[in-house]
Length: 199
Image (cartoon, rainbow, N blue to C red):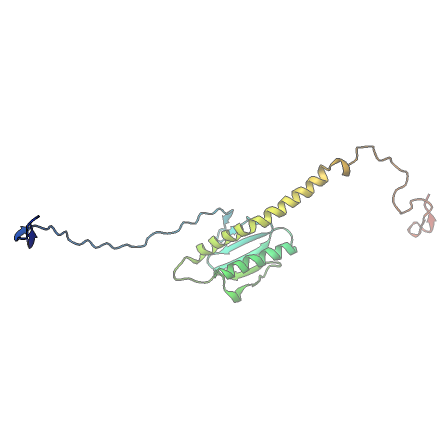
């Protein structure tokens, strides 16, 4: 109960009246930040018998994520070319900038044409999952370039297999000649034929 002075309307008298004020207890609200960011990505991954994750999404390289050794290794998919080295270099540069692999661990592997790096340890995050997520992010960065290369290859194949009228001839349109090219096939001295002429 609280005693309050009340002034009547139109009058100057003040009277004391008992007014009940219901004071609600204070509510303490504690907000715990539990929201997590979900990352959804797709990779073509196989698990080896020892638990290594083998990623085959790239056109030029295969990537092995060694969970026990905390290491990432990239190999040439088919043949070793400049494209392979470029892809490996871009992968490890991306992972190095993201803080996934150690700066001084990026090096050539013990298999010809391979490249490897050690995954950094983390007390806050699962380092293997972080490495897998960042490899998926690297694939997203590579996609426009690989798509344009594939489109160029398809364009060249189409130009060879289905040429336009300007660059194509019908079968039989070019007449057959008895001799073609610059190498003579007759009246040629051939030492490998024991000094005889070819006729």
